[in-house]
Length: 210
Image 1 (spheres, rainbow, N blue to C red):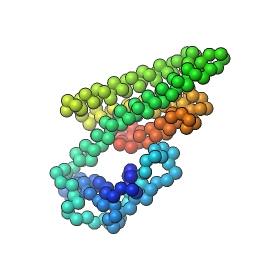
Image 2: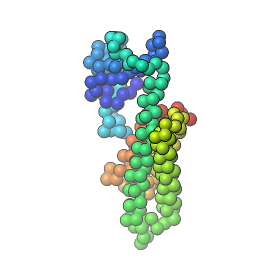
Image 3: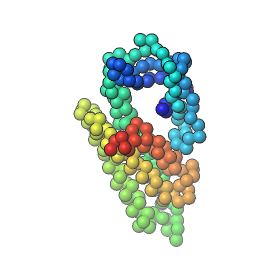
Image 4: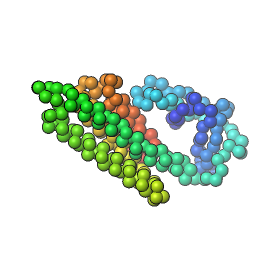
């Protein structure tokens, strides 16, 4: 299991199956049997501290149990909040990459004119704008339903699935517009694309949301 900030956190929240059902536990990271060695050599989310979660015969007092929630409702409510945030965050990465591609296409010249003047490049940009706009409207719609207390886990799941997948495709398309510069950290595109590969997996894979 992987855990974000596991090697620097003082406390971990662990959900586990018990005789009473799934319960949440507050686990101080200095507890005997708890360890979270940091995972190195990542190519994605490099600014995030990611660790391996290891629980070896960990014993906790009764007061470590989170009160008031039994079953999947607890962990899934956390996941739903994270997934909702991702529907917006993915669009932020898409917008950054799209803006970089548009700026580059209007400045980079080939055959005496900007590459944005060529229809193949225009089609890439237009298709990306369409998918970005759809994703943004989806996130906005989910936000309004959330404000009204009408947002369902299924809707959040579809939002996470669609927006991350489309944002990743927008980043990949932007990368092609930038040509060789698309793999340079001088531009944000390849960084967003690499990070979205992780976002595509965490808080539920494509298969989990399908």
